[in-house]
Image (cartoon, rainbow, N blue to C red; front, top):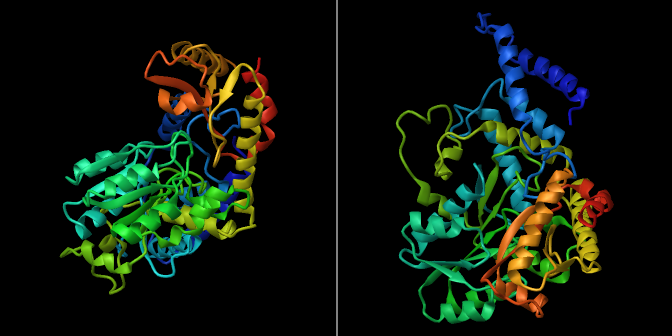
Length: 442
C-alpha cells in the first residue's frame, strides 16, 4: 500500500516549493509536533476500518486508488492550499486547471469549449442541467431508468420536470420509448449515459443524436463513469460508435476521480459552446482584483474549490497523457479484458448466470436458482461469503423484467432481483481473475 520512495519524492518536492518563498521574512509556526504525531497515529488506526480499495480483492463499488503522482501532487499543494475560485486564491493552480480541462476537452473532440473542475459528477451534472434549463426554460429533462439517480434529484432542485425513459434488457435507453416521449414536444434535454453506474451500459448516442435533428433538444452526455473509455482500443462496436459521436453533444461530464486516477473529489463539466459562460455572469466587489484574465469562479456555480484537485490532475496528465495507445489508455484496455474474463467464467458456471456481456468494466451476474426470491437470497449469501475471504463485491437490485430475457426459466415471484456486481476498474484486476474466481467458485 505504501511505497517509502513516495515520501522521499514528496520531501524533495517540498524543498523545491519552499525555495520559491525564501525571500519572505521568517515567521514562527505554531504546532506541538508531539501532540500532532499522537493524533495522526489515532487517525491511522481509525482509518484501518476501511475496505482495501487499493487491492485487486476489492472489486465492488467504483473505487479506485489515486495514481502515486496524483497523491503526491495533491499533498504537495496542500502546503499552499490554493483556492481555484479566483486567481487571487490560486494563480498557478488555476492555470493548471485550465490546461488539464482543455486536454480533457480535446480527448472528447471539442475544438472550442468551456469547462472547469468541480467536486464530482453530481455537481458537474447540476451545472450542465442548470445551463440546459436556462436555455430551454420550463422544458423537461429526460434520462434512462438506469441513469444515475442524481438526474431526477437535480431536476427537482432546478424545478424542471423529469422524464424517466425505459431501458432495454441490456440496460440501454430504449429509443422507441424515447421517440414516443419526444412526440409530446416537452423535452428540452436528453441525458445520454455513456457508462451507467449499475450495469456499465452505454446509451445509443448516435440514435439519440438523430432524434435531436428531428426534435431539436439539447443532448447532455453523462460520462462521469465511462468517459475515459473514449481512449480505449478494445471497446466493442456499439461503445466505439457512441464515443465516435460524443463531440456532437452540447455538454459532457466526466469524473477524473473514477478512471482518471484522481483523489476525491474531482469532476469536470464541459460545454461545446463557450458562449454559455454568459449565463454565469455575476458581480463580486472584492474577489477579483489581481488580473483581468478569466477567473474560474466566473464560469462555475461553486465558489471556493480546491486547487489541489487541479494540481493532482495536471501532474497525472503530464505523466500519463490522454492519448490512444498510451500507457493510460492501456490500463483501460486491461480493465476491459478483466471484465470479459470474469463474465466468461460466470457464463461457463452452473452456479451463476450472466446478464448482458460487459460493455465497459462492470460485470453483473446472478446466482442460479429456481425463482427470483431464492436467487436474491443466494446472491446475498455469496456476497457475505466472499467478504469473509476478503473478496469485496457489490449488490445491485434489478427489475425482474431486465433479468427475465437472460433467465426465462426462472419464476419471477418478486418484482426485483438482487444480483452480484463487480467493478474491475484497476488494471491489476486483469491478472487477478483467477484469484477472484477461485473464491466465487469455492
